[in-house]
Length: 40
Length: 390
Image (tube, rainbow over all chains, first blue to last red):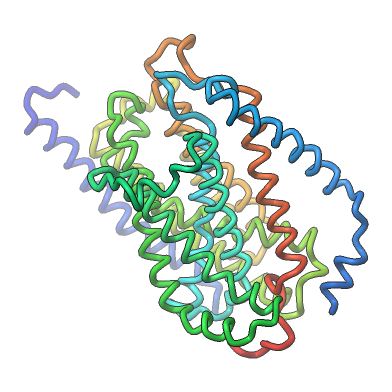
């Protein structure tokens, strides 16, 4: 990926980061459920 | 008393005593060499690499692995998880010894023991992160010392003093958490001053967050690992309550460590993404980074999760040891291995035998002090005069 301006770079890297954060936000509660579902 | 019987029964010439005796003797010779011949005589440090094994392992790993103190006491006294109460004193003791040895290791590195009070009382460098780390370590070591004194007072029979200090428990715990948050993260933030020296895969604007989050699961893993060793070697000093609660501590901390470690992997990936460092992953350094992140964080996190779901304590204990190795690897990567990564191999730092020997000496000193205290004071058991007080 080639970047010509800082704006290009930020758009790309932040775009990917938001996707990663979305995945983590969905994954972490599910992981907590996986860890605790046998407690009861 | 039962404790006195245990001490009286133990022979002096045990393998533990002989081996530690030899290490301490060699360590004393190295100490004399260090303080009489100078740092150049005993280390491979130079102007390119002014910080080596003593900072990378003794200090950075020592502080991270001593995090069990604030993690356990906050779980018990702030979050009210009283089922972890029996783990608090061993964790506080480990933290106290850990921090005391960090200060000792710093003396070896700095070489000016008489100047120790200067940064706090004489010449404060308030714009430096090192000042903040120094101040926090000084205050937290004092807090840990006060937190562990009830055990010494119970042993010595100072009932009034003991009861007075016990009343301070919650305040000390809160103070300890604040100080730990500050200096655990500041140790990571120290390396934000070297963006051109530290490899981009380890350098990040979130280094302070990484250090703080990783200290949490380092502390929890250390409590589990230390408990495992204590069960193996110091079982005689434990009472029924400690033994009965220990499985719950292992399961609870294993579960919590697994969750925090998954979150840590998540923020590490976010760090990669924010700086757009994906392309480094296909290099040799990238492979090494993946070994650290997948092999020593993700893998033990999964092992922890399997252990806590299946109630398999062996899995959790293996994971705790694996995690401790991962923390050591991470701190050494940041301070030594991936530091000055662009230098030719002839200029890279490799610790000398005397540096390694001094590190082994300092760790052994901690082990001996731990064993000395645990076999005498009520750390792994409750004192008969203060049972059912919690």
